Length: 210
Image (tube, rainbow, N blue to C red):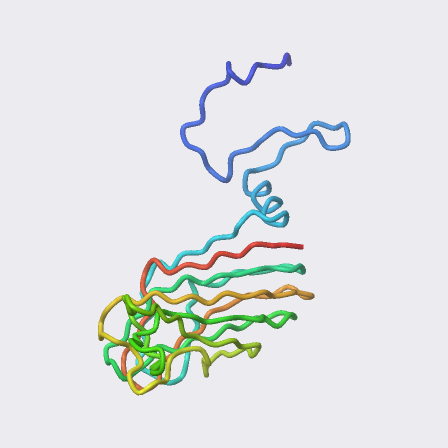
């Protein structure tokens, strides 16, 4: 069959990952799907993005996995960033978060949020949706410890959040060197048996760097 110019082909009804592209593999004409191409590009540094589509709410000190915000990673080196919208039903109760990896390769991470402190000498480590215009404190902590049912990232100050039932932006950023494939997971609990939540729109971005 004679070749046909691409411009003369019938347009696809919709762009889909199952669509196929023509390639030349070592002199032989073959095809790959867009899914295969995407997987290849992700191993070369294209971001892998996961978004939370259902609120993860919990009223327990025992954490559960936020299953929408996990990714399977093969051997390699990665940076990762969780951009999280958090809420608490009570100002004195913090949402607590933890990172786990089911394969081999411990994550190194920072957790940070805007602090409600208003004076240089009186940092209060309370999660805020606005922060102070005068000082703009950022609080947080570093951790090399993986956790599941007992998350270790959050604010356990007397006032854990500045305003109840208000969206608060927080971030967990880190690096992980994976030597055996597994799942990078986010776990969430409450400081006490009072409702806290990770809200829809929270996301995970992972980039392979080596």
